[in-house]
Amino acid sequence: MKDLLRKEHTYKHSIDKVWKAITDENEIAAWFIKADFKPEKGYDYTFTHEDTTISGKVLEVNPVTRLVYTWAVSGTGNVETTVSWQLSETPEGTHLVIEHSGISNYPDEGLATTMFNNYSKGWDNCITGLEKYLKEVTHA
Image 1 (cartoon, one colour):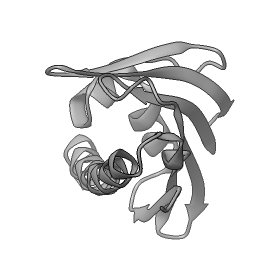
Image 2 (tube, helix red, strand yellow):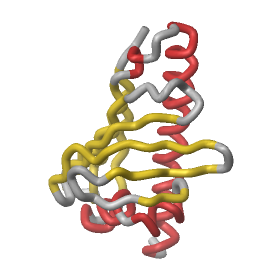
Image 3 (cartoon, one colour):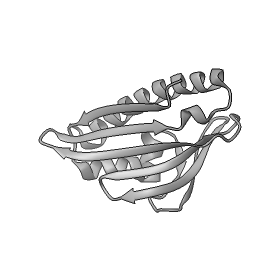
């Protein structure tokens, strides 16, 4: 069972714009999911979509470059995984690396495999949704 998902993408937008899109609860809600979120270490956040709630705690914040938080999906035994966002400036704009780890924490290998596959598709959708949102917001 793989334990770590890693997704990368380069956006043609400034690091400040990408950072704001992934840390401002109103912007998160515009491209990802309804959010009660603050980029503050120790903040207990909640993301909600239909009947699913994702909750966790912000573990690390290094403004415009790194954000780390725990991730627990309702209905899956409150298993805690970890999501990290790493941003770096490039000549093209901003390079983003998302890592989702701890997926092997699910006690059942079948559920762990299902969650790994779901998270992989979900983070692909997030990368695409963020790209579309940034284009719309900046008209670029």
